[in-house]
Image (cartoon, rainbow, N blue to C red):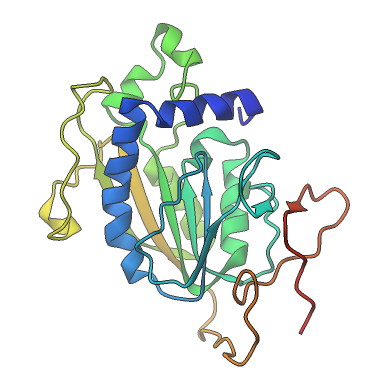
Amino acid sequence: MSTDKTLQDVRSWFDSPLGSYVLASEGAIIDQVLPNCFGYDLLQLSVQNKPLFSVSPILHKFAMGTRADDKNPLIGQATKLPFSNDSMDVVLLHHILDFYESPQQILREAGRISLPSGHVVIVGFNPISLWGAYQPIGKLRDTAPWFGRFIRPARIMDWLTLLDFKIDRAQYTSYGLPLEGYTGEIPDYSQGLSRNANWPFGAIYVIVASKQVGSMTPIKPRWQRERAFGRLRLVRPVVGRGVAQRNSTPDKPD
């Protein structure tokens, strides 16, 4: 499902009027969530190339590409993330679980690289919605985004719980039809997320979870010199890991 062609189809769809509406609706929620997630390093994994973390207070935030032609300083596999254990304060998974194989493995990798008390933010399409009802209809099944594997939010939350995450919030949005002009307005969350409807059958969900492993939060030393990706430590590439790094050399061990 995550072939170059299907991924390009998804990216083209996000550039369409309907896809742009989805991005704007998701961004309205993400802009309320990320300011409450603190730390040093934020990683975005997305099916599209636009950064979604501009409001985050975290200094070192970046996106990792998953295709050779992605214009990102780092390229890697979502199922084999090239980062060490307990190295990320925030991991933002934007529709990766909808369109990539092995969603459970991707979540395991996100959990592995997350610091204790760090956050995972997951954005996806909700099959229990009007949009989900359109998914199995006729030719739609062969077009973006309907050829994706929409996973129930409750199932995602069960997986996260098994990985020792605590669910902090599950926010839903977009209750209209998946047709241009029938989607409804982009929600205004400027007064807070709680001021808007949050029924569990919105087309889009945003799940925020915090890692509960360990009783102490490691303090990162501030005397280290600045690096291309802040204090981020990359795993040295090995044969078969499927990772390429662009315009950057791996950090030497401290």
